[in-house]
Every structure is written in structure tokens, then in C-alpha cells.
Image 1: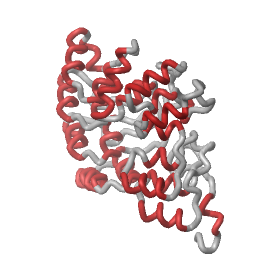
Image 2 (image 1 turned 60 degrees about the vertical axis):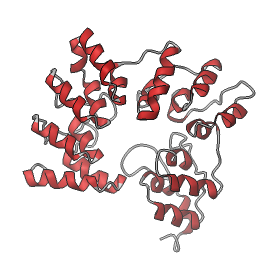
Image 3 (image 1 turned 90 degrees about the vertical axis):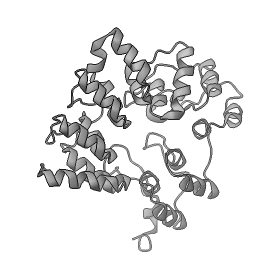
Image 4 (image 1 turned 120 degrees about the horizontal axis):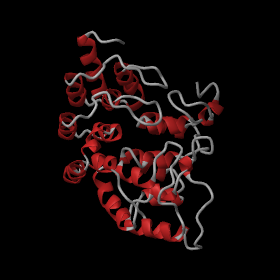
Length: 298
């Protein structure tokens, strides 16, 4: 196709699965397909991308959340490092260079706060000093502390530092981080915390199996739903992640295997099958087989 129509390499079009209008290179990086990344770059794809219709996410920004070899290849081919990339790379030297004039850029990816991309305490402090919002939600409804709690172990210190700057962390943030002690303390103060859907979703999203069992024992809904985006259930999330252990745990606790999300009208099995194509996670095939052996709805 590229040989016949070379311009396709930098075509802009609707994302095949969710919103925005990316280019092929964005999709190849998202899917962690090094072979496709190389093919596109060899065929003339712009390594920096045309990003204004994709929430201002560059291919390099996407790569920073994936395998190092794709990130390194983009950099080798001349990918540009701007403020957001420097923040995500925890490169405080570059961050300070970009901010030496004391003015934040006008455009933020996802329409949220620059703080959502900070990866060091220094960057957090510098951005707050320059007026970056500590509470602004992006178009997905995520605040900076939400974003930091989604970083896994490396996010724990960032969340802690942000709380020292007066930004409160909610129970869902501690659930994402797997901080059982703090979550248990919050539940001891208010038992209803354990029954909040966003707490249950956070624990499922980040594969905290023992925490999910603990929450279910305290009244959490096994059919908890996400508050934003597609309003999918906990089982949808576990299926998308290829987390067979979590899928089995939830189904064993009575999760509705025929539940539909509100955007795509897909079942958990359908989400697992789609994730095979999008994330190329082989574990999702195991989840699909699990549902098929049960005879669940396609």
C-alpha cells in the first residue's frame, strides 16, 4: 500500500478504536509494533508526528510509556524532545531549560494540567511555582494526582510529594498504588469507602488481586463501573488487561459476563478479543478462551 500510495505514511484519520485523529506512526507505537514503526519510518513517516488532532500527543510521548527499544529508535531517528517529553523523561535539566523564561506553554496535551506529566518532585515544585493547576481535570476527567497514581510504583513518591503541597489524595489513588495500609485506614474511618466504584475499579485496573478480594468482602460491587469514558465494568477492565486471575476472581464472585459498556456496547469477552489486536498482549487470548469454555456471550 505504501509503495502504491506513499502519502499514506503520514495520513491523518480517525482512530480505529477510540477518539482523536492520529497518524499510522502513533498507532504503531501504541500497539508496540516495532516492525511497523521501522516500516513507517523507513517509508518517510514524520518521526515527530502531526499531533494537533490527537490531543497533542507526539509518537515519542506515547513511546515513553512502552518498550525502551521503540523510544530509543524514535530518538535515534531525530524525535524532538519538548517540555512534555522532558517532563515524562524525568529530565530536570531540560525541564528547567524549557521553563527558564518562567512561562508555561499555551497548549497542554489532553487539555489538562502540565502537572499531570511531571515525574520528579523538582518538576512538581517548579510547575506549581509557575502557576500550573494542581486540580484541573483533563478531557478524560483525570487530575494531576490521578495521573501520577497511574504510574505504578514510581508514582507513589510523586503522589506523596503532591500531598505535601496541599493536594489531597483520594481513596482511589491509594487503591491504584496498592497502598493497602492507607486504604484500610480510610475504610476504618468510613466503611462506605470500600463500596465506592472508583476504588474497586482502581484496584482491578492495577491488578491488585488481594485488595479486590478484601474490597469484595467489605461490600464492594463486583459489577463496579468506570465513572467516565465508556462506563465499562471491572470485568471489562480485567479482560482488556489480559488479567486472567482477576477475571476468574470476579466471575467467581458473580460478575456479569454479559454486561455491556455504554460506548462500544461490547462484552468483557469482546474487550479481550479487541485488546489482542490493539495491545498485542498474548494473555488476552487466554481470557477469550476462558469465556469461550464457559459458553459466554461473544
